[in-house]
Image 1 (cartoon, one colour):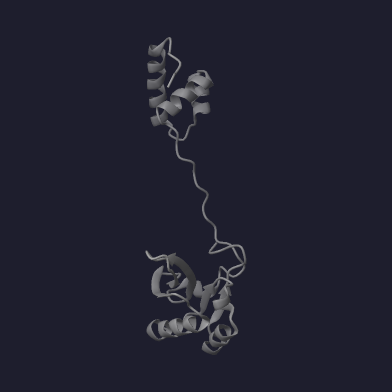
Image 2 (cartoon, rainbow, N blue to C red):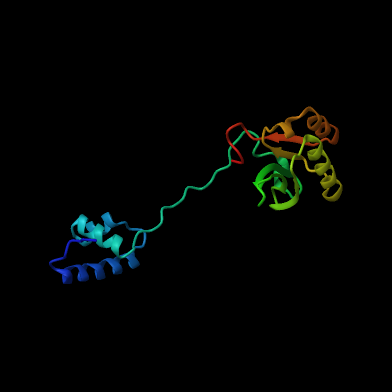
Length: 175
């Protein structure tokens, strides 16, 4: 790889030492502010800044919860809101399997993982009724708008159990 040979490397060494000192003193300054503060050329400071690895990782925006039903009262305590979803995977012999995962949203505890080649709305009802016997009834069960969760049998069973469904808006999974 060809690279430009510096004519005055001692100048860059002196500037690199000044950059390191200013980066330790003012860690949130960027290369532009540091170049202005040191009264140096921005191009040269930028080149040394990246060579020295002084770039800070970008701050990631905080993930905000969205949706209409996100602040339901059951979310505030353990066993108040469960969420369930299907996960798909393949075995070594290329056969596909489905996993029904049920979580408690407050404690982030995995309550159940049911594995089968096909899971129907009846399997969802059986799994949820078994969990309700073990852990008690939640106030709400959050799920996506999949056919297994919006089936009439599941909705009727939830109504009979006096558990409210909380669906994610279409196109916004688990936001």
